Length: 466
Image (cartoon, rainbow, N blue to C red):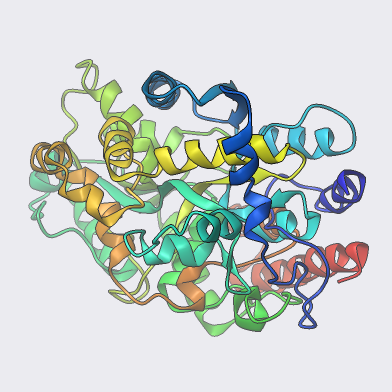
């Protein structure tokens, strides 16, 4: 079982893919949906000697790690049945690489947090216990969880992982620069055309060299397609059947990429590249080189902590929903979810479930939101007095939550399920770089990304026999 899982995950190649189970449902989706609640291990946990110790692999760093350590210490101190040992990895990609390697020989964790791109690969690997087994075994009511967060991690009507540290990309802007340019900071742009208009005003007023700083970022593209009600891959975004083809070279894509290219070519947007860990777009905002940028809401806590030192006291951060080709629409969740590892004993699985429940309770979700900026996955968490006080003090924290509860929940906003997700992302990055450096037109760049994304999808499917 573990060896077979390692072979499947090795087929992913990159660092972003996945979900859970084994077999095939006849639609090309591995896994099937026969769920055995006993697999959660609650009976074995109840009978086990206490405390049951579990290992949790995560990628939370700096302020985020401090928040997780505080939550874990509180959990360990609150009861005598479970002891959690967190293990830190540099980032999601390194974590998933180590997870794949451990499947073919090594110590696996009992619980792991993986980013949203891993759903199909984890399903194909059969290396985890579907979270649905624990939901059913414990009769957990999911009614208070964000519907779109649950939808992302559900395939074949089975919840594969529990959304936990959720975020989404939003518009960041300097309210002070907006005022200096004569723009209303309480009326940020809602469409990409308005981003262009605001950028022109900002540049013409001489308050910043560029209107907006943009990374050549693969996930920007995913969220813009979703916001425009565009499914990223075929077969219902990979949810009705296994994805076999990207849906990138479309009229929508040409309009989006032409806007992106024109913004950079005109100088209204600053292209800050695609290097992993690159935060030049945030520095551009901090140094008043640009008045706007796009970044995940999970970066708010660390960014505002830096601003609080006084080093960039001139910056007044505002946030707004991600502007799209048209106003409105919805976005999927980003960032991480919790997976219970199937190689653990049943008692350890049951123990991991206790920790999962704790981390996603409203009080803990409120605590994580206040400390870091992750979106609470429990709707009742926003009623917490601390959250309400945080929103009153720093309205920027509320934007990502509102963005996830507004707009439709459909195949586009539930997110794409792709085997070699990283292969598709790499294709997007290469084509964006070629376009933004003038080597390809938007039309030619989309032809290239369509071909390379299709190749990545189908090579993965062929390797696993999908």
